[in-house]
Length: 203
Image (tube, rainbow, N blue to C red; front, side):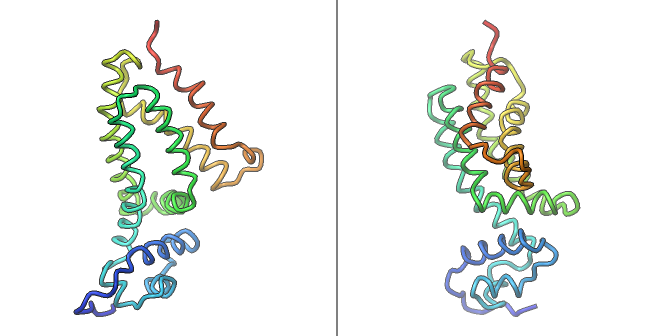
């Protein structure tokens, strides 16, 4: 293990995290080594160790910081008092976020490694839980206002996120041929026209 340097190296966290995600996605979490990550990031092994003592912490930080870029969007839209219009915009932003290249690298790693590596699965669970925590009061307010029917916020989250994740996995990660050519807007429009009405209260 490389010795921890006495003096902090220049801040290279962003480069290290980007390099780690690329290598984890391309080679697998186990196969990618710290030495390769350091080399790809253009830092020494000691500098890598200064920021991240192991690969598990490196991956947790990568997920936390990337998903963290979406958190302000969720916070702003759930605080805005625009009812279902906020929800519609949130779904469009979520589709854009999850079709971003870095998001797809994270998802590829979580899907491939998560079932057998609890620490990787937990990194994703922690970030998903944080977003659900912000969405729950928004959903409960919509229920109280009569905008959607009474429903467990976790189920609403699952029903609305599910089609987006399905599109990302089938169209982008697995690249199923007959899914190609379906645009992001078409996915969100279908979600708004088919799934969302099921959450509407009976009139």
